[in-house]
Length: 68
Image (cartoon, rainbow, N blue to C red):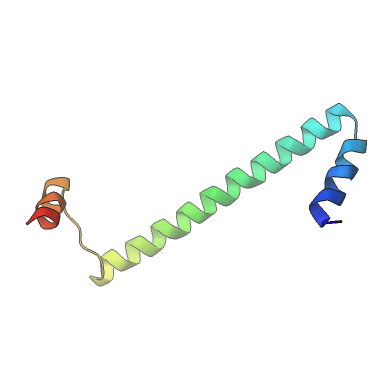
């Protein structure tokens, strides 16, 4: 049996309030992880822009590059 299935079986044994509390904890952790991942990608993009590895400009400039 997989670890996830074992965890789900254990969670089924919790009362409803504890299950809801666990959901809140997991949602908060997932939100925090997404924020951290987004911040990391933003820092990486900023480094690329500062080092000249990425182009910057307007939407119209990008559109012209893609269609020109």
